[in-house]
Length: 513
Image (cartoon, rainbow, N blue to C red; front, side, top):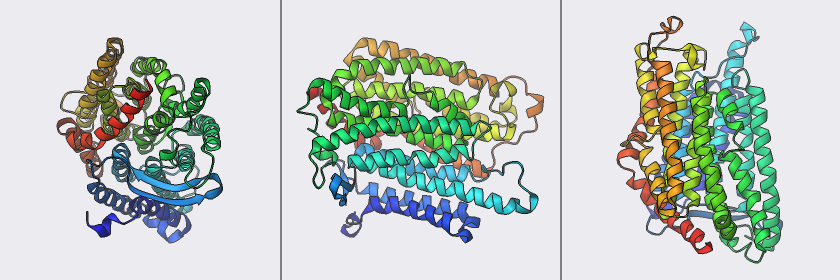
């Protein structure tokens, strides 16, 4: 990368650009009529900027790069400190890739609520669409920020702030039960955030204050002088918040309701990117700050992860709502990720990091394609469909393609990370791998049974006239399909980015053991 480009504050620019665009769309009425093309253009510009930045990442050097540090709240020791390691970079790239796809796939997703007078309909629709685009852009800025945050207080602020746009995206634009789902999402998120706040305060007190006191690099030994019990309580204050976000059993129940009621594009970002903040936090916050407590808690966490794998898979099989089925499948998949983080082997850690990216792509595809179908059919109940592969052939074929990637068919995106997690888990203890294998069987069942119920058999007469995916929708699917194949056949570039980061955190966990 040329020196002139290398010296740019890349991350601040990538965060500020969508946030500024969101503010302008909200504040300038003239921009509301062009909010959708403007939002798409801004999200594509952010994507291009992120790709240019990523091209300058030095995989051999590792560590945090593109770092910026400015004093923010000196009395608290808080800084605007951002930077990316390999794991953070691939998650930022995941976010900036998915947002323009959401913009495109959701072009006509926002509808008017009932009761709007005809003469006010056009203005009201433009206002609602502009609001949705602004929320998407604001969320994009926060997603980049949370994965780039190197200051604990900054990370906490963004962790909590992300609740706001998602709350409105569910509560204002979701299905019939949107308000209850949005409130449940918010309550779970706030509960986790309050627990984390207690941990942040305790860490801030132990840091001693001063400029840069809450930089993650300066907090590595913050709990070193505490008793094991004190370290464990401090660790739990963060882990519980991340487990809610991840989501892990038993604090997962907000996810099916939220994903079932949210617009498909919102669900794609919620499960595909935002929930990764939970597993990202387990790696980037819990392991380096509390290595001894992380090591001590690892066996119990692995058991909870295996329970999530099996329980999420069983509940996915029993669902009639297509979106809830996909949400429960994610509970199972997150179990694999968490197990890969805590078994303590380099192979499993690399698999967990790659799993976060692969799952984000496949789950977004499943939500998008399912949304194309359910918006046409007016129902998410799988029992009301049948034989759709004869009516909506593109939707049926691409749904099966994404489903096979989700169940880790060789050659598709889910295979390599799941294989690495299994291999690393067997290296640690044979029992971890044996029980987790049950999840593979369950994933095949819930994906193939859902396809059978919706897409095979005789055509449901009421669905015979449904239209297939249009040109815009097909263009939204294409980049996801390319990524599924890329991660399946040639994951080496992503592995090169994350391997150094995985080595670092496995060494931390291993030294604590």
